[in-house]
View (cartoon, rainbow, N blue to C red):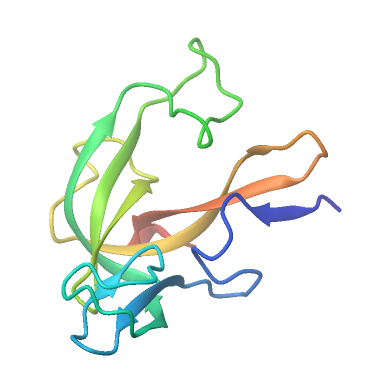
Length: 144
């Protein structure tokens, strides 16, 4: 069995059958943030708490990235094997817009406002043989 671990701790609940993004919420003004923050970007308050942001939202805007991701998000792809991928903002139920890699990478498959679902993916394998995990969103109706 291959070991797996998040590329960055604290971004999503894991391991769990249904992962959710983890952010923070200001208890003074209600502002949400992702990733977790120690202070509020809206009111500068320090009264922050962990917030479950859920695992679904709507595509707010998107583009296709046609260059390889940089460290620490690089994969094992080479210039010859690289496949462009979608990047977008997902508007979560709380109103926060989260930047994310998208499974879909074609203008024909991406529509502003479409429902999206969180999924956990392997970015690459580290030197110890562990799969490094991150999140992306995909079209909700296409996720298995």
